[in-house]
Image (cartoon, rainbow, N blue to C red; front, side, top):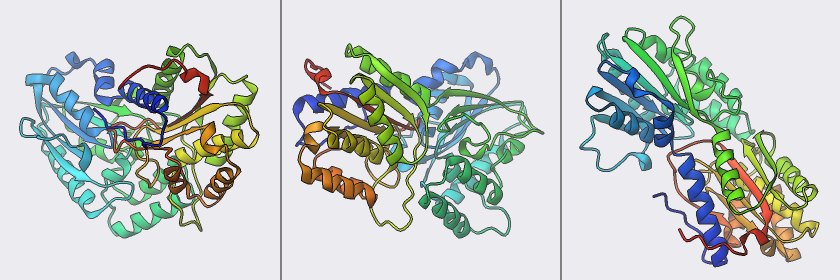
Length: 399
């Protein structure tokens, strides 16, 4: 079970609500379960190998191994250390720890192991390639004449100015071997190959997810998307409607500056007559010139909350959640903010300063609003919800 760490300052009812919301959403977004729902493993009738990379790689690969049973022939998984299952002695999968958001020397070494394994797969065998967000950094093989340092500098600069995932992946494709179909070319010799994808890209562009390592026009590979941000949005909607609260708005594909989208969500909530309003997507923060600590999801949630507080609009609760458990460069998974937390003018001033300096995490910690889970093993973008605090009145779920 994923740990959900909240401040003791939070009201017990708010704590129960938050734990239930996060638990429900992440359970619906579990990549292992989504693999089983989306793939017919009867299609694999030869010894089958598994290659996996990205934040959801460990759970996806383990589900494939278990479901293939005697047909499973081995595989390689590139995963964040915290998500590698322990112990792994009963598994034929080889796990290699990798880093994110910037690739490191051990990412390159792990990628070399995966490529070597891919080349060794017998031509009569099959292969399932499990791809998820974070895979662009995990699967790193610089082109000849390109240094790892150059890749890191390029992607770090793009991240700092709030570049979109499309811009990041376009840069990566120009610098690395396996992007843009490079891995598909290496696997062209196997009998059958299928890519299983957990999408962290809002338009599900397969050439962009993990920079499209299996998208090769000369060696076309069947891709199956097992989940995306709409999966997370539906999970949130189910939870809210389970409280008997109608959704005034349930909007996916939200992009742009986090502070702008936070104001939009607050305005939509006011116009909705205080029904639940939900956003899902991937907003960005331009941190150039800032030394603050914060992430796009918590900044969106705080900006929405501040806007409502400054206009004195009723009693509400705002909850932001980065489904991967890591909001930008922080250790926060999200934030839970109530109208009472920002009632005082001094709190509102400090919240405004935190947003302006992109230093939202210390402020949220100071008021007991930060949600921490650690890496969750999934990655379906960010969620933000605002609803009347009255919706929690009879909340009795205990997690």
